[in-house]
Image 1 (cartoon, rainbow, N blue to C red):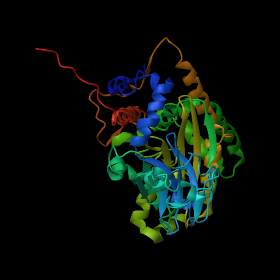
Image 2: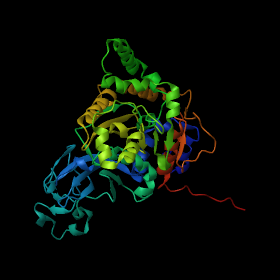
Image 3: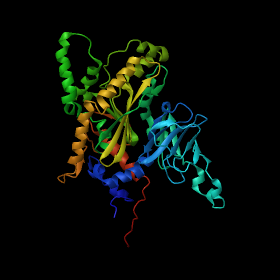
Image 4: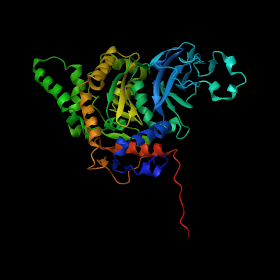
Length: 448
């Protein structure tokens, strides 16, 4: 018998205020319920409008374990559709991206559909005369995802009708997306190039938690970033400018005191970010001409406000992280309880100097690529943790650092930059969305 399915109390029991049960990382049953409930009840990122600029352009992706496609229709509207033929269930599109023209054609029996999902044609349609086909869901075409919102060209979707509106779900956290976009003198981003894809043999939540874990960089990355900084320090005597790569690596070796002062902010519904007052991205070399462009576009006061906001990692629960100052985004795609695909994307600031995009690309290669130096440190730790959680010595994982009894998760607050507050915030949201559409167990009143 299932231990957790249709049992919200059992799900709630997995998360305590200061610790979580190992099953949230290791249980295939819990993972299956995340796909059914958590990812269906939250607003999930599915793509960026710049990926589908022309009519017929599409990308394929997943919302949890549900295959969907995002397509530009003939009237330039954007549609999010289930990637499943209503005839025999075959995936309509198998490539990561492409242009389908004016319609999709199923590769199995050639049923065709307009790019808004409507049924266009069925071969040998006379074979369905007097069968009642017109009364079935098959003739409705490709099923649409009911809830879609495009925010400044970021496309989000929610499978279920249960839950908050887009605006209520994200609230003030959208300010991180705003800041990244506003760094363009034209207020526009373009997603450039294919993502760097990197497989991790661990639970997806480990990666999400790590985005706001500031007590690990100077430890886990000592052998990589620490070595790079050590080599540079020996080379400094020869003179010359600091290489861009060293500027990227060096902040990872900042002391605890730096990360404490950096601060962390939590928002309701599991969102949060590190870097309230400063961050590892705050001291990059100035790019000639960029500030002048920003002043011309926004005025000096507004330009200084935009560029002075140097948030480190912003987590949008449940599965993406953006870095506004460096214009990157990571998407954590859960494949199994112990398997996660990470996609790392880069954005170009439209109208900004090319050197900014050069730095973005370098950062992504050095930190997030399968061939990166820093990323492999994290990967080893995640995989050690996944294996270590098989130990029967302890069943609970501690997230107690700077915990204060009575913490609320329906508020916006700032905390010490080394607090695990955002991890606790995420797990409070996890419980909420896992149980949002679960039926409560029947309560039997004792006879008087």
